[in-house]
Length: 289
Image 1 (cartoon, rainbow, N blue to C red):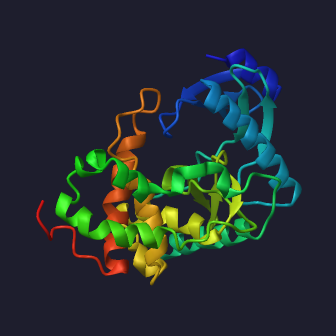
Image 2: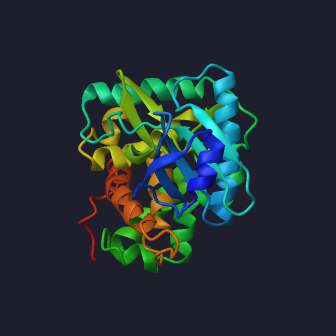
């Protein structure tokens, strides 16, 4: 535990600390209570990836706050220790964390995303993710992990793959909008009717519809509207998003992030039928399995 480091960073003795079991990376998350009456959320890098991400998050928080953004918690401090950096943020424990979802909550998140997309930061373009958005090409090269999930049969994939491959190529990823690119209920909360976003390590510049679209499968899985109701007639986008999850959800569990495959399977279970509907493909239960 890093209580002394928390205290030095925040300028007050830690009188209580509670570890938070949330998120999909091995970063440690703590809510600490301080002797001066304040509380804070502290995230600690646990390996090289999470350490690098915390440095990126710090830059995003500083850049957005400098532009007057209020859709993210206040940055309270940063300890740049090379092996275990600490990002200290405003404690949002008292906010409302969905689900459940209501139309008003969905609109609050969309309003916040509109604000995000209107801003600019010196972050990489979305192209830095390389082949991440060529999911159906990866499934075509090695269909076993996808088929092993049991969501679709070999006959369905054989018939649908040419359409999915062509459709995903139609999406323009490029753009100047700031993207969060990891919008899910574990990365957002609501306070006073407004949505706040956390976990900015994937921030980049690109097409804002990609940002919104990647949120929709988890939203529907938690009782929110279907993706088609939020973004109708988006067959290529549905192909891109379903391909992203189809190429990953059936892969082996990541030892240091064991819950990632689970949430990817949840997202794929919504995204794949979305793509089938939007592209006029046979229902997933059709064709020989």
